[in-house]
Length: 169
Image 1 (cartoon, rainbow, N blue to C red):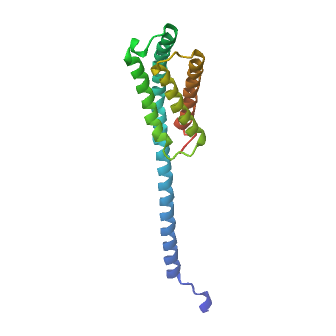
Image 2 (spheres, helix red, strand yellow; image 1 turned 180 degrees about the vertical axis):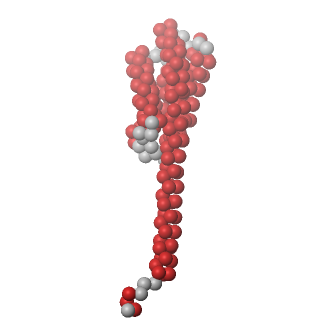
């Protein structure tokens, strides 16, 4: 008869301890899921904000592109053009680069990192044309222009993936 006796007190204590550990585990799991989601939300919001900056960079680039063409065709210097054109172009690109630093931070997606690196290099290459004192090689300039525009489009598409949570960090 002693074999049929079951100590419900011990069973209740064990069940209570198990429920406590399971509850704590679920709470930790929810916290980590929330933390990842919040990080993705911050990146998505930053990506959405970059769309306006990219469009601004395209607009200011059109003006700078026109100035550089005039420099090349009429053998003029940057001082012959309003400095604010290049300053606006530089400011638009630096705003993009600042925002991209947040997206780059702890990002392991090589495609995104390569696009960011390519954008920065293309921007710097275009900026050199504006400040060079020797004659501008139009073939190099047109190639740089195409590359810069393509990189901006690639960047915009990649950021679109982040803004829709298709890519996360």
